[in-house]
Length: 113
Length: 118
Image 1 (tube, one colour):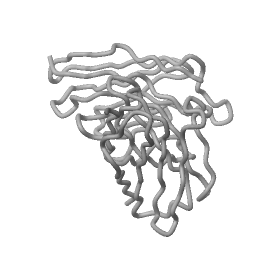
Image 2 (tube, one colour):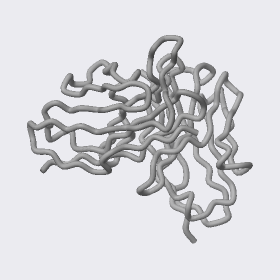
Image 3 (cartoon, chains in turn red, brown):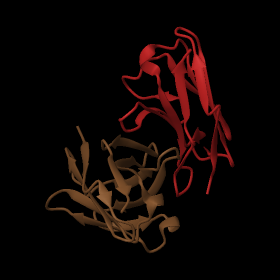
C-alpha cells in the first residue's frame, strides 16, 4: 500500500499569514495516461466529517475559497492557504487513490498563532 | 444533492459485533461506489470496505474475515458488520461515496462514534 506522510503534524500560523502543509507519498501517484496526480486534500473541523477541498492535486472544488491551492506532482505535494482566516482552523488530510486501496495521510492540525 | 447518514449503537461490548447502517438520499446506491471508512482516536482515516454495482463488495485485508457489507436497495441503505470487536475498533465510522472519475470521497456522512467497552 502507498503510505502518505504529512508534515508538519501541527502548525500554528497568524491570521492573514500563509500556511503550507506537505504530503509525501511513498511512490508516485502520477497517471502517465492523463498526466494527473491522484492526490486530494480534505478539511476536517471538530465534530464534522472530512470535506473535499482539492482533487487531482490542484483542482479546487467549486465553492472552496481561492485562498486554498494545491501543488506538486509525483510524490511531493503541498496545500497552501494564502491568507489564513479564523474559519480555516481544522485538521487537513491528504488522500491518494492511485491504486486500490486508497490511503490517507495522518493529518495536520492547523491552529491560529 | 446526495446525503448520507450513519446509524447504529454507540457502545459495543468486546468480542461482540458492531453493526451500522448508512442511509443514502438523493441518489440510488445501485450506482457508484459506497465506502465505509473509520477514524480511530488520534489515528489516520482507514477504509474498511465498499459496495459497488449495487451488490458487489470489497474489503480491506486488514480486517480479514471480520467484516461484511450488505445492501438493502429497497431502503437505499447499506450496512457494515464487524465481528469480534476489541478496544482497537473504537472509532468514528463514516460512510462515503467514492467518485471514480476524480478518485475522491464526496460526500461523507456525519459519522457515528462507536466505543468498544464492557
